Amino acid sequence: MANRLPVNPTRMELLRMRKRLVVAQRGHKLLKDKLEGMMKDFVRLAGNYKAQRKAVAKAWPEVRQEFGAALALSSPAIIGDALEAEHRPLTLRMETQRIMGVPLPQFRAEFGAPAGACSLVHTPVQLDTAITETLALFPVLLQLAESEQAVRLLAREIERTRRRVNALEHTVIPRIQTTVRFIAGKLDEMERSNTVRLMKIKAMRTAAEAGENAGL
Image 1 (cartoon, helix red, strand yellow):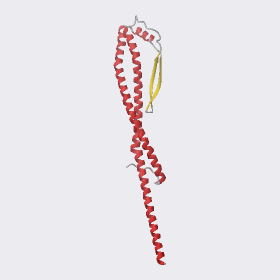
Image 2: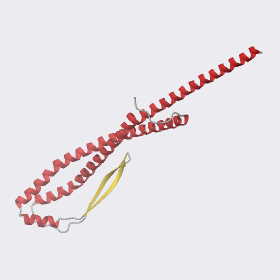
Image 3: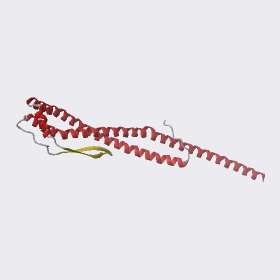
Image 4: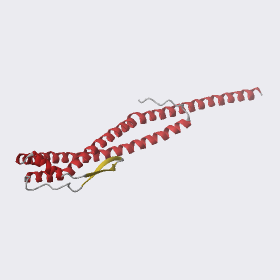
């Protein structure tokens, strides 16, 4: 049995504890519903994250292979000049969306125009393929980072909410219930004692009145 709270057994305290119990039970239900909702969202986000990791794990070696082939077919200086010409300014913004009250990041990226134009005569076709595949892979990498952070933040909030649910379910609510039973029992005990005392007083008065009448 849970330890009761240190309170005085009064009717006012009993009313206060009963109100507190209602609030605690309502909060427990809301938190439990939130936890179930977050778990569903976590499973969905974790599935997306897993799929995105597989996509990156499959695409990235192919991009590296194209870059490796380009380096094998041309000189590092020419490849470096070509990559410098293909340099593009990047604008990255972060927005947020809320899932069950948890703010999760959303990344938005925009590429500007290339700084120059590389010579198609001196560069191998593999370099063009590698650059094109890298640009196509970048949004997937961005989504992967977004999903990874979302999964991490949601997992943290799930753990925090689970601790609160467990505390309410196994500690707070049982202690309040024990306290309510204790106060109610004490009040009943005092009520019975008062009843017995009043009955004794009444009996004594009745006996005294009977004695007076007998003396008359």
